[in-house]
Amino acid sequence: MEYYPKRRKDFNNPYTLSYCEKSNTYIISFKDSRGIQQVIEVNKQIYQAFNKFELEDISQMNKFDRHIEHSELFEESLHKRAVDKPLSVEEIVESKINNEKLREAIQELPEIQKNRLKKYYFDNMSFEEIAKEEHCTKRAVKFSVDLALEKISKKFQK
Image (tube, rainbow, N blue to C red; front, side):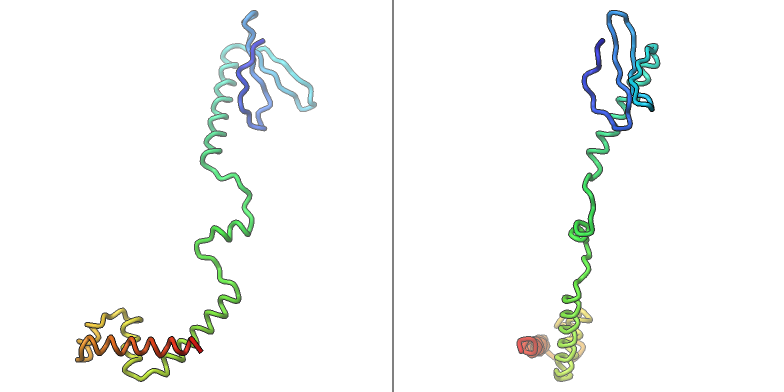
C-alpha cells in the first residue's frame, strides 16, 4: 500500500488516504467514534474527492498561518500596541498640575503679552498678522511673545 507523502493535517481531519498499486484499490482509513481503526475501499471518484478536500484544507491552513496572528492576546500586550495609550493616574495628575501652573503664569502676564501669546499659540496667527492687527512692528510682537515665554518658563523652574 502506498501512502501519499506525509501531509500536514488539521486536527479535525481524521482520515488517511492510501493507494495500492498491485490491486489498483483506493483506501480511506480513519478511527470511528469508538476509537476503532476502520479501513474502507472506495472508488476513484470518491478517493479524488477526499484528496481534493484534503488539499483545499491544507491550502486554508497555509492561508491561516500566513495572514493571521497566532499569539494569545493579554491585556499587557494589547496595552503595548495601543495607539492612544491611556495615561496613568500620576501622568493625569501631573498634566493637570502643569496646566494649572500654565494658566496661572499666563494670567500674571501683562495684558499685551497675554493677548499676543494667545494670538500666536492658540489662534495660530503669525507675528506679521498680529503686528498688522495691532498696528505695530513684527519685531515688537516677537519680542513681546519671547518675553512672555521667558516669564512662563521661570514659573516652571521654581
